[in-house]
Length: 552
Image 1 (tube, rainbow, N blue to C red):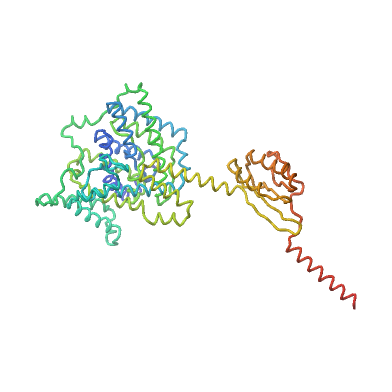
Image 2: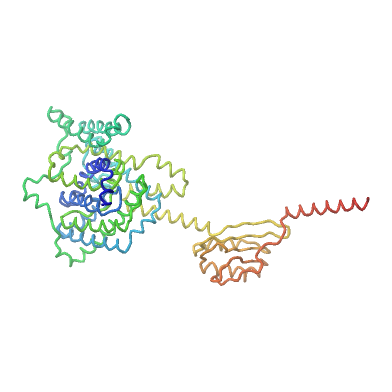
């Protein structure tokens, strides 16, 4: 009963957001299937299962799953190598089993170690990719497939050169529809009198307007009319037999083929990492700051991929583009994801002809606004103001995601973050303080909570620069761990160099487990110069008073 309350409590807003995600997901499912060399309906099936099955099993409130652009190269290579789509489906089933196992061994916990600046850099990078990739579609240049995120495109262009190629393929009808769609989408968020219509998403109004405009262009014989190759192209089965032929089942004879297992393992690893990254990103976007159990998510993805493979669908992951569109549309719960899956299913069964009238330019406009919200200048400014240790991993991730792909970009950001962490740990391994006293300076070295072998070089350099005849107090009172290398270094400094160069070394707070004997008197009893001067003045004043009394 509680499940029903949770799912249906925000049905109005969830239906509106589910409708927006459906409009975004439909061309992406088809485009990714086309780029993967798979049947077009395999992308739709994956989207339906991602919405209905994964959407229900997942604990994420705004994440949306479906076929992912990051898997297209793996899918295309596998289908080509196997020579049969049904053999490939066996690999997808194996991938689902592996993901299910990863969920049970709690492998999803690794998502807790993704730094926020890297996740935000990934989101901003994907936002830039969406904008770069959708601008050509907005102008009527559809040479690249919908959903492509690769810098180098299949047609030989790249994300930047295709922008210049647009000028040779501008279609005025697409430009008109793009401008109208843009005005509708921006107005829907800006003007207060439209808030009363908030139940109807602006994206639906934009899509409806795009269809009507193009139908008017066609009916009047206008040169602005957009041809079929610039519209959504959903296959339309004309008979029940054709519809049944859509469902392809795995050929489990391929289970004895080692290549099938390697492909399954590859899909499982890549899909799981992308899912964990996207779940972390979705949780960051969630205005209510609800957190997803990533181990449950891996199980849900595994079950989803197994069912998808049994019905002839592509492998899936949690997808940032759809999740971001879902969040921006005002989703309150995972019901919006389930609704998007229902709408995908109904579109195949009931209204494929109507959907094939949607101009790609309208959908491109919706996605461009999604991309802008992911890569807002305010986000870049925010990390710039946080300083170089936050900004550099962020901007490196952003650039690398655009220039390579999601996983490589995140890996680069992680490496840079780790380098900064190690560098910070080297500096924070201890604090160094020198106090000036009348009868000799005292150097205080206070060790941090954890001192690892990585700090050896810094501590070694500090000890090496301590001059002869110094007084040194090394304090380990706050430590919980000191590496043996560091303990040996301190012992050698005290017992060998200390005696040779008359350096008085006092150890304080070292635990019994460290096997270093603390000094019996590790506190400083010398008098500060300031205190010495005050005492001296008081003594002179006292003697002066005594002399005065004696004279009297």
